[in-house]
Figure 1 (cartoon, rainbow over the protein chains, first blue to last red):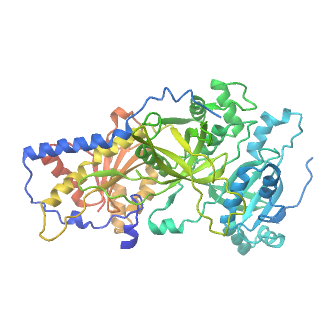
Figure 2: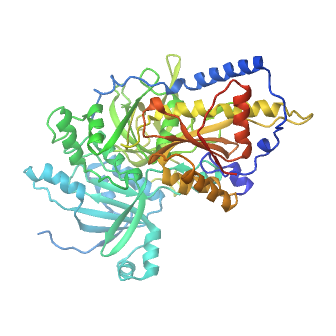
Length: 69
Length: 530
């Protein structure tokens, strides 16, 4: 897949290639402290909670009797 | 007996073009719409079969028209539209087996319209080709019309095929707008295998039997949403109903991501909503969404994951008041300090000179969606909202830990790499995932990677359901991982069965996340695809 094509790929049409971001990771880097880890985990949970708001199930009770002509 | 008659060859847009005749006689906006649509597809010739028995119309005739005193015929006409000049000589060569003539006609075939002998509802089953999408493809915003299927028309031994989803004008004798939208929905590509397609008359009969709002025929009472759901169940399919999330209307994210997920899965969506008539008297209306244009890739903050398709701008829908594949823009409306969406008609600019007649899309009202109704396979038990939630729950860790690890690498004078990711969801058959999705995702890798991934899924992963829920996380247009969910259990037990990692370090990042971020993410069996 050419770079141009890859740049315009959608999430479903893109091809897996060598990722420069992933390839550079330092596998020997030290772990973060427990305290920082706890803080990050809380932040992640908050972000997920925020992003899931539009997907809350809603009651269909009011919908069922609607008449469409 | 109906008299035998020869095929007729008429110029598109001439007085003998059936669409022109209909417009002249009853000024139907649907005929105007189709004239504009086919004009932009460069229609040149109409070949008319004067005698055509249509399955849908015969059912309508049997249920209703046969017992009126008006003396309706039980036979239709069918008009075939071509983008080249077609005369009897060319057609004769094609039906005589001349390969060149057959190819020429097929290449130029734009679709067909069944013409019912009903003065006020002549437009029966209509299947037309979609506009070319070269620009969208080139710009990375392709049109997605996955619910389309291939229809074949057989004329004197010649088979002409067109890819689309059937539409028809509402015939209030046997159905309402909801009936037509349901009928289109049940034509979806997703149901090719085991499901017979109902006629509008059958849909009306089922709806009246389960929760009648009056007599079945003529069907001028309309349908209640609960009747629509029952019709879906009677077709051995499972109904899904999703109401709006903002006081009965939809936020953009909920509407866009769900519509995109269903369409990409091959399921059209019946949208129930209010159609603004321009006089402040909105009425209930149902349409069928058949496609959308992929939005431009939105930037995502570092370390975060965002829903792909959350900002869909354009949807394509079948509206019995207009026609097939009508283009509507998703517009945001400020509503008591909250933002909801409306669907506003927006015809594309004409590309073949001026429109040949009034384009009824201009001046048509906006639709405010209030419910999405979808028919899915019975075996598919996972709720779409549950899969959307799972997508976030099970993929948010990846950009988070990637961001953390890349920040540790900070190189002087070098901007840190972007670490935001997009996540998308779909339902699809396991066999299609193995066959098509993996092949596309691994097209740039050596064939052995595809072979290994397929065999791992087949031999190392616990047996999965016929339909799987697929969650894909993607970084900068590149797939990072696919998380596969079994869809045959209840949502309470929705957990990943396996994950396909497209890079070695995805696995390392997962271990890293679990080791240092108080995480306990279990994505099931790892499938190596690198």
